[in-house]
Amino acid sequence: MRRLLTSLTCAALLTGCASTVQSTGVASQNPVDMPAGTSSEFAVPSQPGATGSAASTTARAGTSGVVAGGPVATAAPTAPGSVPIATAGLSLGPGVDAKTITVGFTIQDNNATVSSIASTYNVQLADNRGAYEALVHYYNAHGGIDGKTLRPIYYTYDPTSGTADQIGQAACATFTEDHQIFAALDTFGSNAFNTCLQQRGRVMVQYGLYFGSRSTWTKYSNEVAADGLPLDDGGLILAEHLATSGFLSKSTHLGAIVRSSPDLTTAYKDGFVPALAKYGLKVDQTQYIRDAQAASDISGYTADISSAVLKFRSSGIDRVVFLDSGSYAATVFSQTAEQQHYRPRYGFSSLNSIVGLQGSNSTAPQQQLAGAQGVSWETQADGLAKTPTSSAKQCLAILKKGGVVPTDAGTEASYLKTCQTFFLFKAAADVAGTDLNRDTFINAIERLGSTYVATNTWDGMTHFGAGDRSGVSVYRPFDYHSNCSCFRVSGAIQSVGSS
Image (cartoon, rainbow, N blue to C red; front, side, top):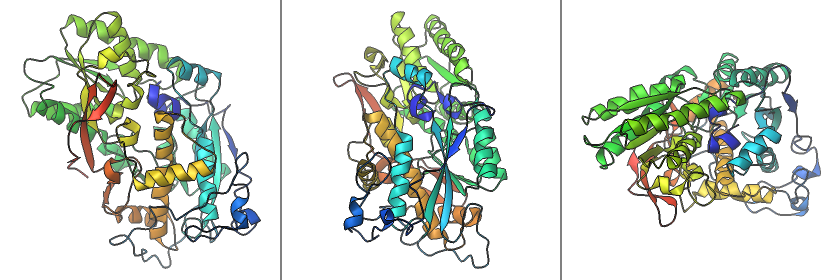
């Protein structure tokens, strides 16, 4: 549900908005993704710029032209991560054989309910299955990953019919019982799904925003992300910026909207609040909102946000921060506040998907955003970066040749996250060596150091190391400009300090 609800965030139903185990999951294989050499479709040379008759064949059903061009920018890095790990005698992981790697993808069914929510909040829905197919085809036409062909398994779910854990259990069963995947790429997260994959020895290469607190990262040692940041670290850098920029002072009155999920509560209590205390500052009022896990929870979740407006207004709160995932909470709060002629100043971070808050297409009242500021560690997802990284350019070129083109900044951000999981997967799998399994893959991730170039971090910068698989190493401050109804960076790149 990330595609729609990260932007709205019906919200981090995202880590939910799922289907029931009994009724919704449908797994399928893309019939065109055959092993290289079994069809003339895949007779594309792997050298940069290669052309020929095969280059004019169909890349995937419904598109024209096979993806051609140079190698992915994030191929196996140079030192310190370029030497394959010595793994002689180790076994191949599940879903891996001498010729193929089986990978899993979850596909949101953009049904009438989802489309209606998207229309209400003027959100464009991304074609993520199309993006997956274009990327799978690209790699299979250009030598594969770790010299092996990708074999995709797709799991389609109805995001309106159940909870995150229900969809998680069903998806994991499809990926590990009905089929045998090695890794899940770019999929939603839930406790049930993550725990199941962890217990069954599968790898999870994920978009990083919803990955949880530092303790969650420690718990799920099978998971990696190029743009991940432990949420308690995110809370810390937000608090430090707001305290040092003049946004907060001992004369201001701060209110916090906090989602009652374990990870976001941890981000607030262990990251944001202690960081404020170091500057002699505190939160004057906290509104905990329910941790919506299904579409049926949206009305109550919305009511919790709206009720905070009256409480904060009557308490004299003039600053509001959002420890929630996606832009939905900020959108609802600002709409309700505007109706009551109440205009506090807002503090945001990459948690809040601010690309969904700005501009004429946003349903958030732009006059409400005057004076807002915050911190960004996700450039494209925040709509702040004007110059794409080399890997972002590579991503958009691959997708365009596969017939997938962003319709707005939100869909572009979604596609860049999708590419990022593929690119990181390739970088680590190529380094892992011949005996590819979970341990050699995670070892390879941790040995990438700062060599991996991301699609969605500032200047593509990342850092991985022993026990550090979350990627993000830097952030930048931003503020809102009324003359363009947009957010812009307001300071230099700064180190997170914990990666």
